[in-house]
Image (tube, rainbow, N blue to C red; front, side, top):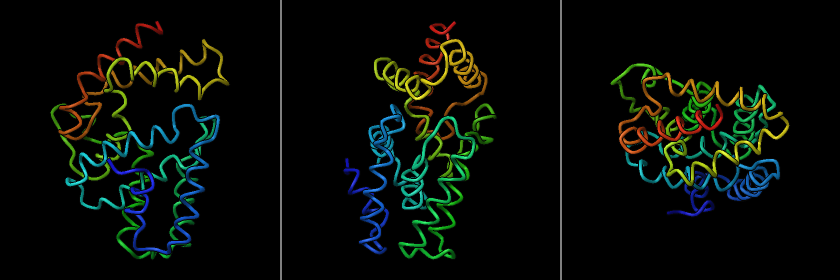
Length: 215
């Protein structure tokens, strides 16, 4: 698997090197904030490992790679405008690095970052439907951890709780149960065939186990 730095270089190889190097340092700093117990560099690297498994299926691999890096560039579970801020961060980076507003890379990355904020598509809501667009893969990369082995899922569960340490136990439990029950109710947790075949069954088992634990 490519390292974090190699992945960043792959996404930015055609642009101003000094600007891209500076942003890579900033990116590592942002993802290393102490409050990030889950949405951190480890989580990003895990997503990147899955990215390389499906890269050949993508229409615009570089746009998806950039979207992965900027999706959680700024992360605060208390904020309601996180997705908008991260789109702004990408636009600032693009301007400094020399990525034209008119380029396909720019428009596709922006479209993916906007899609990431929706969390759901028709392919999630319709039984038997599959999605094959880059946006479907981006959303599935975000959800892949739900289908991890039980030990890894338990670790993820604890790390997510850490990011909501500002909430009391009853408040967090109510919020988390609401999120999990939404997953239980939708026909498909994963939009693409690759991720659904690989992770759907385990994800549903993990979620059910957590619901029982919290209940």
